[in-house]
Length: 137
Image 1 (cartoon, rainbow, N blue to C red):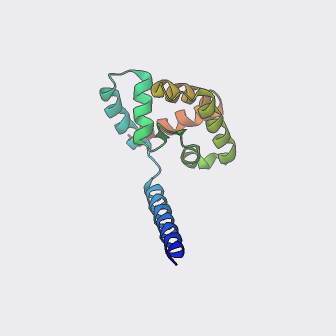
Image 2 (spheres, rainbow, N blue to C red):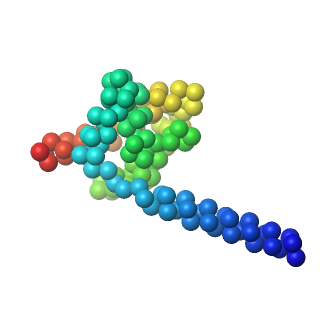
Image 3 (cartoon, helix red, strand yellow):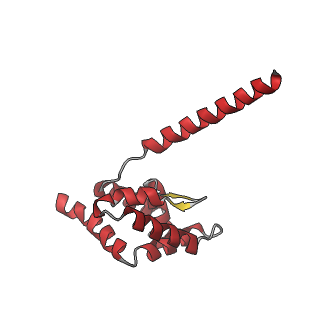
């Protein structure tokens, strides 16, 4: 009987944890170019204008990066879903994330993985996304 009660408690905890992580994941919202520019300014000031720390700060604020697993390819793909190449983009981001992974130099990992991923078509999409703010003015 105690074994069954312990098992029920474990399953209950697991379900609660899953619900909490699902809720936390659903809070993330697609960033706008305006939001990116505002966060970018804050990050530039915090990291004294250095490229790698600024980039890591920015992608963390946008919810696209964790120090444990690097870039969140699914979220990045959602931002660029209009290009109808989500699967391909996720593969590129995941590949670059793995190739550049260096948990002892997080800023460099973020920067090098970004450079890798944006060296092709995705780089043009990022430029187009960022130029939306210019149009909004």
